Image (cartoon, rainbow over all chains, first blue to last red; front, side, top):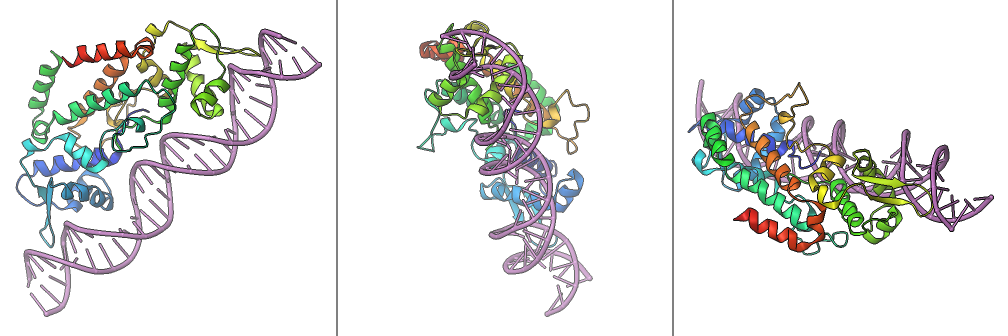
Length: 147
Length: 147
DNA sequence: TTAATTCCTATTATTATTCTAGGATTATTC
DNA sequence: GAATAATCCTAGAATAATAATAGGAATTAA
C-alpha cells in the first residue's frame, strides 16, 4: 500500500504522546514498553534521534527515564516523524539533497510527488502534542480546516 | 523515509503518461521498457491491474500493445496509484476494511493518519493525465490551490 | 506459419524493516 | 560502596516487502 508510515514513526508518536501525558516526570521505557506492548529495545532505537534533535531528555540511573524537553504545544507530529524517519520524500526523484536524482526519463509527474509531500508535511506540522492530549482541540482544528 | 511511494506506483504513472502521449495507437511494453529503462516483466505486472480496472486496454499479437481506455482528462493520478498499490492507508490502525485494527492502546493519533491519507488522496485525485501532458495546465492548477 | 505481442504464474534476489542480544555507562537507593 | 535500575550504544538476526527474472500459453497481424 502506498505512502505508508512504518511502525518506527507510528511508535515514535505514541511514545511522545505517553511522555506528554505524564507531564513533568521521568518515565522509563520499560513502563511504556509494557503499557503499549512495544519491544523495549526497539523503543530505545526510536527515542535516540528524538533525544538528539532535542525533543526529549533522558536521565540515567534508578528513577530515571525520559521526559519532553519542551512544552507539548511546541512539538508537532511532523517534527517527531521527520526526526525518526527523515524528511518526507515520497519519490526519490524529488529529493533535492540527492544531486544525482536519477528518474526514468521525462518524469513529468515530479510536480505531483512534490505536492504530495508538501500536503503531508502541512498536515503533520499543523498538529502538536497538546492537540493530541485533548481530543476536543483536535476536532475543532479539523472543523476549521475543512470549512 | 516516511510516506514513500514504491516504484510500482511511480512506474505506473510513468507508463500511463507514455500511453497518454501516444494518443490513439497501441504501444508495446517493449517500447516503453527500452525508452524508460524499466524491466519489461515488471511493467507487465504493473499494467495488469490497470487493465483490470479499465484504465487501459491491451491488444495481443503483432502490432499490438496497450492504449488508454478513456480520455486522459478522465484518468487521475489517484486512480492509477490506487489501482496498482491499493488504497492510501498510511497506518494500519485507520484501515476501515480491517475489522481487527490492532493498535497499541490509546492511539489518539489515529485522526492524524486519517487526515494525512485524505490530504494525499486530495492531491492525487486533483491531477489528471491531461494535466501532466501540458506543464502549463499543471502550474495553473498549482497557483490556484496555493492561493 | 511465423513473428510479435499480451497474458499468466511461480520463483528468486534484493532491500528495508523490525527486533534481539550483549554490553558500557551513569545515577539512585539501601 | 555495592546493588540496582535505568539510559546509552552497536552489531547482527529474523522477518517482511519490493523488485526483478524466468518460462511459458494464448492471440493476432503480416
